[in-house]
Amino acid sequence: MTTRVEQAYRALHNSLQAMAEGSDACPDVVLRNRSVPDLLVTSRTGTVAFLNLLDDTGRYLGEEVAGPDDLGQVDMIQPATLEIAVLNPADETREAQFDGIMEALKEYFQTLDPSLGGLVDNVEVIEPPQRMILRGDVAVKAASVRIEMTLSVPTVFG
Image 1: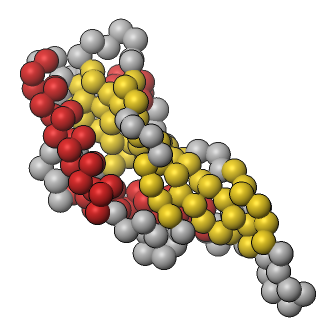
Image 2 (image 1 turned 30 degrees about the vertical axis):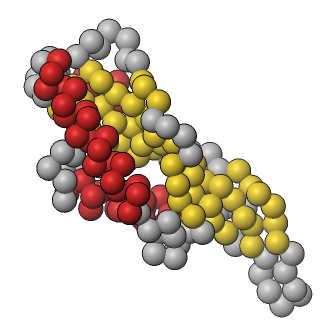
């Protein structure tokens, strides 16, 4: 059986995937838990952009005390990171593509259902996008966006 935490990550990933498929600015596929250096090595032959959703380690907010016949719930924050990268040797093209992706993400997060269909209590971007510097890759523009999902789970295992 899939844990509630994994269900939340899958729901966020699927939502991002649907946004990307409907956007002319975004790559068609949103990856999950891939290594940025590996992605850049495999994409050296041409222009590429990618979105990569990374799972992270959650933290507990506290435990709700339940009655003798009820199962308790553990409230937690489950973070995720969305990496955005555009590899293109042409500066103007790279900048324009990156800006288009960031604009599409801004619109996505402004209209996102904060409960992911009732699966979580809240999902939100918790800080402005952070520029990622990739050593030796001058033809890459990249950033990361920190996301937090707040949810209740039946056990500490999610």
